[in-house]
Length: 169
Length: 106
Image 1 (tube, rainbow over the protein chains, first blue to last red):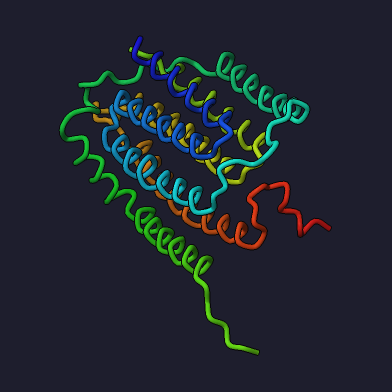
Image 2: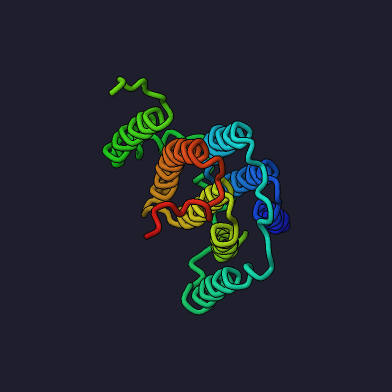
């Protein structure tokens, strides 16, 4: 319980740090910390495979790509980005969203139960085996479609950035 | 143990911070990172919900985790294409300020 609150505090603080820092590199590093914190939450929830995927894919690959692009563009900061006059309307919208979510959670959501404690059925050594059985039987078609999606994304990124030698007109 | 509601509240808070980031920042890269944060908040909610349901014989159900796995894959694809687009925009406009991207305004 205490662990949950400390981790939640770290997650929210790093998300706010990502939002507030003027330098985009600091934002990216805060976001890496946030992703790692969420990975620890996945471990607490009995999902070790997703936790590892989160660390490798999100905190590893995706954020390295972000940092690479930030440094490539040299676009660490934009001048005059924050102004309090511009802040109130989006702040109002976000506050409305938060109040709506809180209202629904308080009034509509029934407490359906506690999350599984670590060491319960979800956290045994067979978890990964069971997960992969489900992934490759019931979810085989979405899995293959995901591979096609990744291929399309790769081709799209190459097409977008590749400089083609055009024939002179 | 921690009730599920706490995880859902945390997920909602993270999602709201992501929305706020999209709304108030003008740097396209930071807006993109905020979108990643929102995806991550939704993932956290899905894993939390998935961890409380078991099948009849007590075995855990992995649908939530598998869906999160797909979301991570889609996020990776999205980042690859989106960053390529941002690089192209920077090449043509020398800026990634989203307020400058108004050349299609009628």
